[in-house]
Image (cartoon, rainbow, N blue to C red; front, top):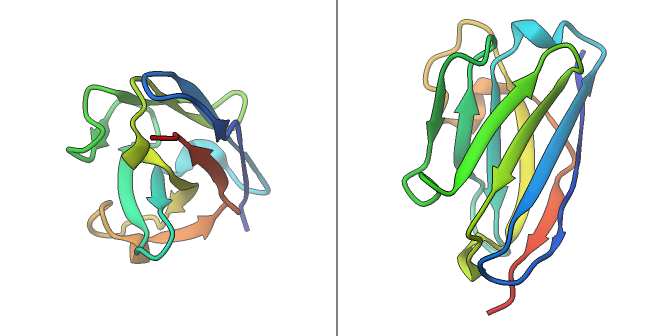
Length: 125
């Protein structure tokens, strides 16, 4: 069982930056690929980005490519989401998740076994 706790959300003006953290406990963090998802009010949860277990591979949604960066520190059992050039449309609750081993597409929420409680990011228009 893996527990995930996000932090770092808040209110930031358009064009600003935030770094979200996701701290893991209760499992072998370095064996899990990790994803970030977000959910705006009244919408479904959507893929933001992905990082492989080793950190050697990352992938991003088109909407955040070039602005967001995912990294991880396996020694600290933590994955990060650096968000730059924030826009009002980035406003959402952000969730980290640990991917099920040997699952298929990392884009799908059904392939993630463990989820954090979320952290809110607000970018006023």
